Length: 159
Image (cartoon, rainbow, N blue to C red; front, side, top):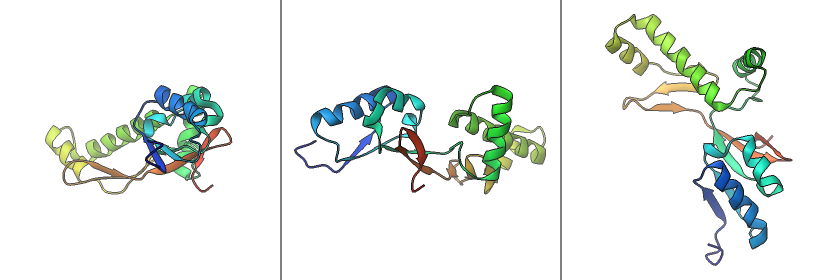
């Protein structure tokens, strides 16, 4: 890869491998390359395992607990009050999934087909993971946030 003069490295790996790859970059003299990983590396373990070698690494996420949006702030406050820890993106996605289902059931009643159709019709649902819209093929369109490791923590890119 180095001889190919690459300027971008995309990590399609889990956190342990990503941290090892980041840690190997300084030893290889490859600090000048931009590194981005999947949402799977958005965890404090990346920084704990990779240390300073993770500085500048990018990733995407659906949820960032320090997001200033009021819905996120309220969710984080409630979650921390109940569980005495910061919510992860897994918790946020589960929270949105339950709220989407509640909305669909309230609209459709107990019929499975009607619930499915009600979910399929949801547009711009204001979740803590951003606005959620079901597309015609059944997939979900949602916002993504770009994060970067700065000073040993994940921050919103550009902040």
